[in-house]
Amino acid sequence: MLLPHLPLAQIESPLSYAAGLARYHAAKPMLPFLRDMRISPEAIASSDPEALARLAEISGTSLNDLRRNAPVRMGKRTYDLRGELVTAEFLSNPYTVFCPACLAEDDRTGRRRGRWEWALSVVRTCNRHEIPLVRQAQAKWDDKLHDLDRRVPERGVQLQSLIEKAERRSVSPLQNYVLRRLDGVVGPDWLDDQTLDQATRATELLGVLVAFGPAQKLPELEPDDWDHAGRIGFWFTSRGEKGIREALEVQFRKFDDATGTPGARKIFGCFYNALAHSKSLKKPGDIVRILRDVLIENIAMPAGTKVLGAELPERQLHTVASLAIEQSLDPRTLSNVLVAAEAIPEQAPAHFPIPVCEGRAIAGRVKRTVNVISLWKSMNFSRPIVDQLFDDRLLTPIYYGRPGARGRTQKAVDREEIAMLVGSLQAKSTELNAEPAALVAISKAAEKAKVPAITVVHMILGGFLERVFRLKGQDGISALRVDPAEVKQNAAACTTGLQPAAAFGALKIPRDVGWRLVDRCPQEVSLTVHWVIGADASHQIPRFDPMIINDFKARFTHPARIAQLYDLQVGEVVRRLRQRNIRPVLAKSEIGLNFYRHDDLKPELFI
View 1 (cartoon, rainbow, N blue to C red):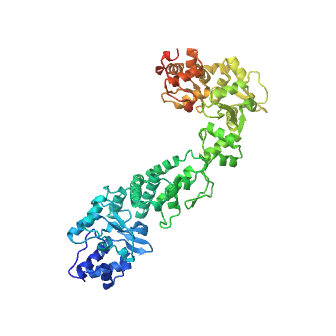
View 2: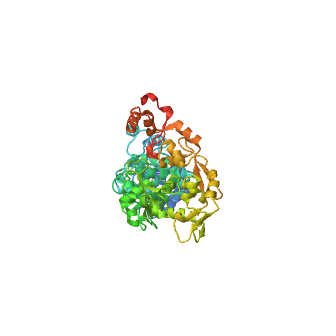
View 3: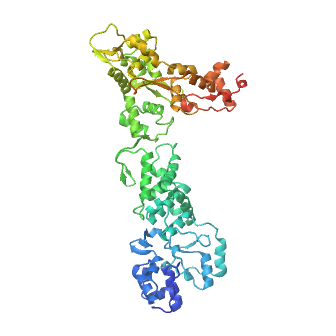
């Protein structure tokens, strides 16, 4: 053992300590000293366990202290650093890294010390002097020993010049996290659940994507760029999956309007490639699973597609084109119906994703459609009653075009919905073999009771009528028979207030706009509906309180009503509103009609 004993500084790396021993005990450079001590330079440079043990033996220093300050080689390109398993890429080798201000202070005490943390690639700023560390590339084979006396010949004024040229900056939160974790301090949950390699790499790669974009080539980044990326990335990874998803989804939104069908490589570029084809990081960690989930949730891919090493078991999303092929539908017709159903926006790009279940359900409706013009035949019902079924939402029309869009037309109804309505009515009836004298068809009963035919339909479905029959051998609603006296007797119970058609007519708004106002309740610009319930509580009859309608009419208006009030053309009303920059409180794009507050409109604007 070498005497007198030279203590190991708490901050010092084993290589720096070996250089100190060489000068203190032999007044020699580090390389010949190691050979004299039977320590392989290559072995000590890579912190081989046997080399560290030999260094502890000759110096009398604790082997545990030496191992604590070194990434100890465990296998090919794998190291143990204070209990953390890291790869060679986590280390700054083959560069020699130093802080000129730290070396200047060391020179005043007589011995330079290489800090153990300088061996980590993520450590790029001196936490004592808050200046960037200097990185020197390897020029000779023995530069890997990082002998600072030889590798950094600058002293005094020259060293001071390096210090003065350095720009001040704080230590990055990622560097702080790594060093604190190596000291046993608990950090953010998601990062702590990854290996140190995975946490650092994921943070920096995500930061590169956000800061420099997907087209950035990683080898072209300088250390300061990586430092900046780590700062940016830590803001997201420190918040776990929620933060990471936030960054990835923002990147996705940048391609919402892109032409063609941009894939994962186009959208995420360097970030995706680094995770998909990493040679150095065999297990990138949970970041891969998060990116995979985001890709599956946003890009339409067929079953069997390999996504970052995992096979997609079943399709999650469709595009209009892929859904049309799968369902054997015309893509233009399907696109129109998807727009009307608000599954896709108007002018949606070709790659716009549609959830598989939603897309197939809408496509199924298209394949089951019955044209409105022939609906009365399909239901064996009169045409006026068909219109009333739409008014009261007992049937839902399938549209082409969004609310308020020019050319928006009612095209069809889902055959399944028709069957359910007819089936519900027939389920309330008792079969008869012959036409009874005292019973009549629904339309006739409505005429005798002086109520709309739709009211009789509601009365059957709501359980207001006990005597409901159907003629044997006949189909459809026209086969139903009711007692007109019973209809007249119970009509008052389900005719309080205004029918939807009357309420919407009073406001001079289309039926669909009226129901959209109902759907918005209880928001400010909305309508409240009163539901009448009979013996069968599963069916509700919509009615509107006239006071509610009058109050809405007094507070809100729309261009058609304004035009009628001031004897103007609707187009002229719209022009004047735009000219004065008067914005609607509810937009046409959302509900099909622009609504304005009466209080915002001055009469002189239209006179």
